[in-house]
Figure (cartoon, one colour):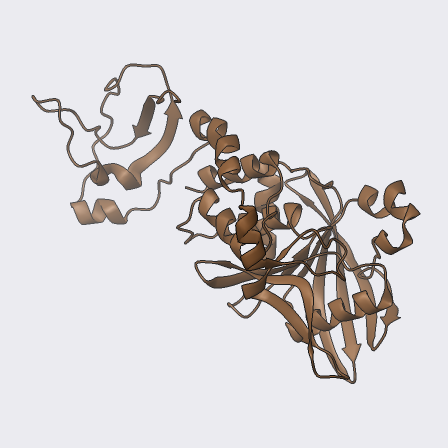
Length: 340
């Protein structure tokens, strides 16, 4: 059991005082005037009334000049995050029913949810080619596409680029550190090397790629990214899309909360409607990609779901490994608390 912290509330309206029975009036009268909530060891009801607020109850409720500010996530919630993370584990029985391994993918062991799996059509046979990619959903609404990094093979990259064109991708987000790309372990295995398909002109099968550098970014002055503008052409059809390549985020690691928030907000600005989806991948399309997609949902102004609920939904519609580590989960927990 975790101790329940005392909370001190500061506002510019008279504070609610208990009656003779020790009861407090309806606290909803004061909801829109709270400016700070923080843990404290001070006794309750120690706050002196300040300048009264005039106007009717409705007028007071409609005032928006004061906002809720939570400088730090409550300690109890943060401490409980590792326990909540363990509760998200999917049973092996469920894996066999709801997930499938894509043998031709970079990581066949990273299963893909069957109900949201994305396929492209084989132009020779007309048969679907299942990909290690999914429509990620929250409350049955598509919010992004996750996929694995394509293998270092022309056919794998071609299939991936065809998906980008078919899905009319709003923005492509690649999360791969320079160590991921240049790391010795991947360089030794040619097939597993991460092809930088997004930063150069090339042709992969029937798809031609033109890439133009478009500046750099530093999210919250901490996490670096490079921007590109891609033009994909196939059989006379042309698709243009922006690319964000996050370069300062290593595999199985997390990033500062403010940087994650800034990245999520940046991606969300490209999403204009439900059919306008970003495509996001790291190496396996699960840990870092899952963290970003969860953050995209948590920073939405109308978000009604907890961190736990969001990640559970992403795992059910993506891969059981969405948000891979306790550290990633804890960062999202802190972000979700700050967005309350």
